[in-house]
Each structure stands twice: as structure tokens, then as C-alpha cells.
Length: 276
Ligand code: NAP
View 1 (cartoon, rainbow, N blue to C red):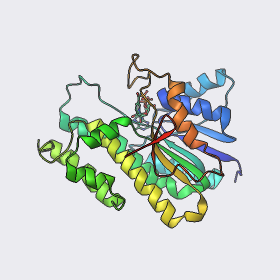
View 2: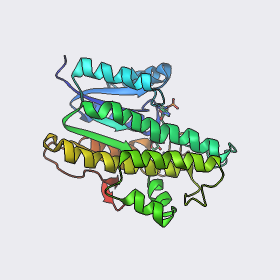
View 3: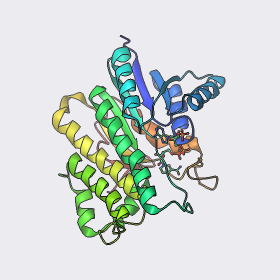
């Protein structure tokens, strides 16, 4: 088994994820895994970074596919005995003018952004080693969507006592409410992407709390963040940040020094803790 440190970035064949891998290849003292749901796109991205003189490794990972997540888990366990850095970056967003019915957008968006990310956490968090760093790429849109929720929902999502099961039930309820056409009267905002990212931010707060309660001596730091508005296929060419600039906050959180005991369980944007 290798004693080398290891970092994994989900959804890193392009966009912010690729820029995170590029930065980690330069700054992380260990193996860096570029992962992609499509092996061809992933290998092409690895080749691109190799042309830049960098040496990422590749592993397939589709966060919608539990078998794929478990194959990565078993690989990391066997080869490295765990994991040092996990960046949950993979995500999707329908374009604003997409005419797909809202209930379908809700189901598809929540499936990847919330349920897929959660499945990765369920399988990989137990592998994270002492002094490990976990970064969940959420969005500022989670904060604005939170403010668009009913007072009752806001209270639940801001609670320091909400459980993972309660959060999962709320995310599933949102999808069901959109199917029944009652999501607005049930207190939800009109954004599937926003609700999915509320899920990512609240999940991060819950997981950080559990790490503090159950693995206190291990000094693991886990945070949610926003990369900013970044020029990628998701956000388009008018966005203000380059992918490299978008990677700065996630990479900062992934490389928090072993002496750091904060931030932990926070929502971070521009390397600054934001109120939730
Ligand atoms: P992007 O260019 O569309 O890249 C998204 C990445 O996620 C792609 O590699 C994509 O793979 C991958 N992905 C999607 N579904 C996946 C799945 N089921 N399994 C594995 N990988 C999957 O988007 P981006 O702008 O870089 O976004 C990266 C993250 O930042 C997302 O979580 C996004 O919500 C967040 N974010 C972005 C912005 C922004 O302004 N760009 C702002 C706030 C937050 P394929 O190539 O196979 O589709």
C-alpha cells in the first residue's frame, strides 16, 4: 500500500474541476486524481495537463452511479489506505431558457448535485485520513435560494440540529412537490439548482458537525464553498472569473495547513466565511 498522500476531484475533466486539478498538481504534495464520468473526456483532460508538464492520475467516477463510486472507494482503500483531500465539484445546471418541465429539472438536478454528492460523501468520508480536507463546491445561489424559502424551511436549513435523514427527506419532498405542482405553496423557491445547492451547503454543515462529534482527534476540516461566477460551459463566457480564479477558494480549502483548525463547517466564498 502506498504511503503517498492522495487527492480526488470529482467532475474534473473541464471547468472549475479541471482548474482545481491543475492547481493541486502544482501545490499538493501527493497523487492528484482527475476523475470524469466519461473515460475518454477524462483521459483527454489528463493529456492536456500532461502537455503543461503536470502529472495528474485518472480514475473514472460518475457520481450518479453507486457502483462507480464504490469502485473508486475500493481502489483508494487498496492503493492508499484512504484519502487525504476530497473535492466534490461535479455538478449540473439547466440553462435559464431550457424548456424542460420544471419537475424534470428538479429531479435531474437534485439527483446529481445533492443525491450524487451525498452518495460520494457516504462512501468516501469514512476513508478520509486524519488532517484530511473535504471541499464541497456549492454556490452563492444556495444563499439566495435559502432567502427565497419560507420562514419554516429557512429555520430548518439553518438549524444546528438538522440530521442528514431530515435533509434527505426535505430534498426528496422538494422533488415530489414540483411533480405535484405545489412547490411554491409548500415554501420552496423557484430554482431547482438553488435548492440542490442548499442541500450541498446544509449537508456540509451536518457532516462537519458529525466529524467534530465523532472524529474530534482527527483534525479533518470540511467546508462548502462558492467558486464565484466562472467562465465555464455551465456559466458561459460572460462570467467574471477565469476557471483558475474560480479554483482559488476550493484549492485554499483543500490545502488548509495541518496547523489550521478553521474554517470548518462553513460556507466560504472568496476565501472568506460567509453567514448562512
Ligand atoms: P461545468 O464546466 O459544466 O463542469 C461540470 C463538471 O461536472 C463536468 O466535468 C461534468 O462532466 C461533471 N459532472 C456532471 N455530472 C456528473 C456526474 N454525474 N458524475 C461526474 N461528473 C459529473 O461546470 P463548472 O462551472 O465547472 O461547475 C463546477 C462546480 O462549480 C459545479 O458544482 C457548479 O455547480 C459549481 N459552480 C459553478 C459556478 C460558475 O459560475 N461556473 C458558480 C457557482 C458554482 P461532463 O463533462 O461529463 O458533463
